[in-house]
Image 1 (tube, rainbow, N blue to C red):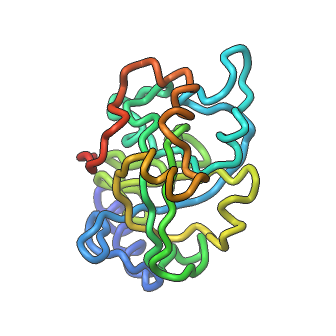
Image 2: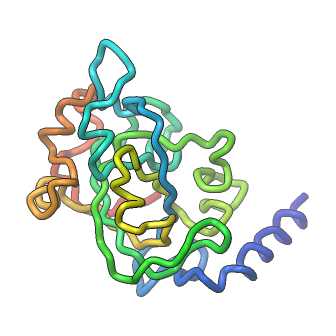
Length: 211
């Protein structure tokens, strides 16, 4: 079985000419890399960003720059609700690369900031993207230590021409990014979420954390 896993990893890296990030886990110009996809399911998500009485989303949670984070980053203790990184904002910057067969080219250097409001669980059909566990040595099938599934409820992602781009990532202050682009939720918007009252994170957290 060990030889099978090693063979698989060699295959993955041998067909990655379209990926700009390299190494294990992948980096680009010294920065950590993340893979992305997009989704829409109308639920309030694993950070509780919708009315407490049901499972609907707040309007901003459907139409803003928000994302579901891979399990190990959402919560290192594998919790499925109110993870430690709920409400954190991550700036994604396109590298110009993408995973072959899973996306398409996007111009390098485009930066957008997304707030984590949901979980990308390590279950079918997410395992290739959101399994950063021991199977692939701390990164997913494609070599990334972090995956973000971007909310596309109002075509806010595909409307920019983003087709699952490869990106670099860094943790940033939500309010500063909201002032620059209102599509990034503010801390007060996150304050409406059920998980905002769990004391999981600092609203002013601005540094990348170890995965």
